[in-house]
Image (cartoon, rainbow, N blue to C red; front, side):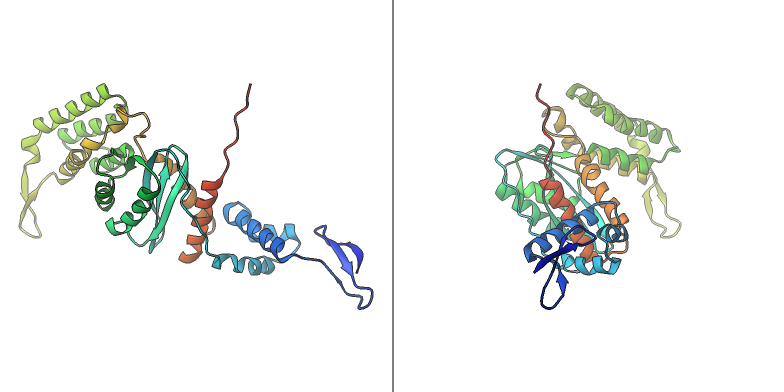
Length: 318
């Protein structure tokens, strides 16, 4: 074999003196590693397969053929080794009609602890994920949106730790139910109370907020008890169901709404998951729209593993 120039990509070409056939030497492990890296660059990046094929001087069909085996690879994602307490922010996001990814994120170490692909958010799906985390880490606190099955799992596995309710979820849901222009005085006042919830960032302000809500509840107690007859079923029901719904939402969450005012390690929202993880996942899924559910799971796994293993830049030392 003698050197016979280079290929378009810059690799050395070799030619046999006897058979006059030229080829490029390839190591299977190096080829596999390069394809893995290229696949990850594509699936987590902005470039299309057409752009990548042009850079590699091959056809788009060649790139798709190389990526075919990558979709079948099993991605192992062991839980990270943690020596300190963790504060878990938990949330789920829909990636297809029949699949939801549940993500448990450590606010302190700024990394995903674990995730699971399920059909529905419920106790039976949250419990196994939280059980694995409880075996490998000491949980200091949990932050969630208050989904019923999740709350039940947290109560069973972590009965003695703070379970902070996401303030952003309460405000968002409350304002949706109350609408922008409530019809009654009680709705106008409650809307202001819900909006002021984001200002209760200290224990003193939280106590003032609780007091204002209790005063509103006492003031409009009779109004909220009003009933009317349903024109379809001819049964009596509460007239102001949306107002009662927001009231019930706050009453059910109020005991777990202000743990963050007593412990600075606990965040008051799940924004680290929703903004830092879920929004990026939705953007990636939209960018690769058209993928079947199984391939979307591969995409999500690649992103979460990359998000866990990424290295933070070191600070400049002066």
